[in-house]
Image (tube, rainbow, N blue to C red):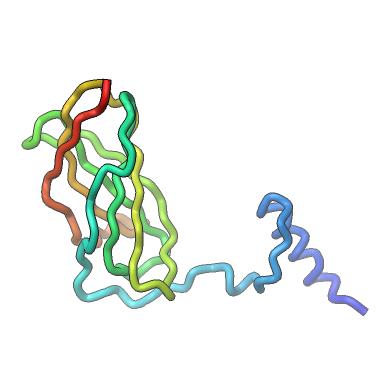
Length: 143
């Protein structure tokens, strides 16, 4: 005998996961909310992971900020170090079992051979900042 409801759930998950059948229970696939970390800090970076003439990817690592599992990596950037008037963000889902979180944010519509200034930050999905803005950094896009 088989559990029809369980089978239907697994099949639905298989379709949602692109055809790969996972044996992880549905309840275990949702990240739980973790207590907010008292002091969040960037432990590595930020740095330019990749730079092309019209885009760049900024990467940094911080201790796990906790709180809501849905977070965003934010990068404020611009061509003037005192006016970071553009913002890029990328969603991330925290893993409460990990002590660190790696953020990656793609900056689009950049101009070739141009110097950009940027600082990295992160926030919960509700807009509350994790309070980790980096110092202002710079890079120049290739030709």
